[in-house]
Image (cartoon, rainbow, N blue to C red; front, side, top):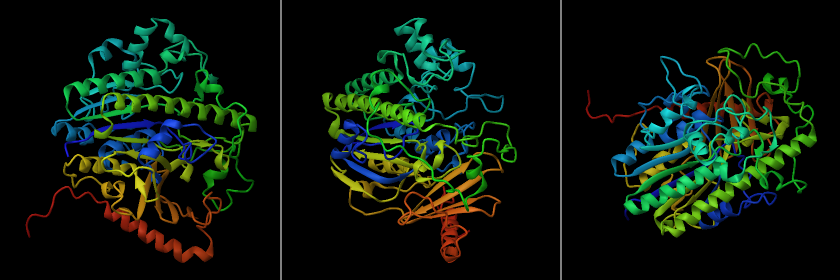
Length: 503
């Protein structure tokens, strides 16, 4: 078979259980269509529960501790080989439209960033820059989530073309004039929303690639449903009053948990021992001050944002059909990490490696090779995407990649390629570092230089309410899993060069 095209569609911070095919409370007909026409993997995990490290793992096939972008506010080094680099050498066109977030929103002499202020707002620069960028020969970028002040780059250029000057009314200062902390109904018309921009530009590029008759790798990277919870009408009201299972925590749930869990329920908690770099720490704050009716409203709009994203996904799938590219294009839908919207009394993201935060939706469609209508429970990791896609393109997988080639599992020829997955979280240089090991049944989370940890039996306790770390009946199991986790750390040692001589 000739080289397949690749269309990677990603959302941002989407809970794994927000697909209609799995959850009847949410409406996602187009993602459900992908599941019917392809395979749904219901045990897929990210490599890190934050944006930059996870996104860098998607394109490098490496864990954050290997590729260098170990936390938010860090940068993926440009010299790290990326999926697009290998594909370009094989004759592929490569493009990314939407959110990249491979670089921080600040820049220094030692670590420059194209996603930093004030360059972010420099329209003259962005008119002349479209790549190369991490293996993508063509990029059109944006950095903001909903009305955030970080609106700029190519999206701002497009807005200025569509509605000169007026677009600033829909965004927060200094780029715009919308009051900060706006929530729920976003007054921006759909035709100016970044979902429309990303969808239209991807449709245009698909047409261009079709005319060139060259294989392509296109990443449609949507920033929703990452908070703030904002969506234009009618999406913001789509779930108002609908029957929703609103998550909540349980009193005393954090007994025998690492101390930062209980601290999130204390309004006056002292987080100073965790603050090392002076930068913002996701999740280390008071979580219990959100009223139940606000949690529900957050969830309603969050679901609306996902349904809007689903609508745009349908346009992209229809475009493939119209261009006659469906049979030749491998389509992947996933997200960079999950989301907490009240589960365990927690919100957004942070050092809480629950399934809600590290498990992700993963849909694969490729009619010639991937079975349709199948749900697969084999363990998957986003770090596996790069090596697996290279194999689908009949290209060698570099030995330096740590991800596992899942092609035979995706094709239904093998039951599993992994016995475990690893997830890292390293928010601060030394004060907060986690490693999470997940196998078919158990989850173990270890904290650097700390005696505490987490151990869950996911079969008996899928809600992860009972931490077994200090339970005497589970001491032997904990020791066994710690040994397994150490083996896996050893197993992912980069071996970029084969041994070619005895000495």
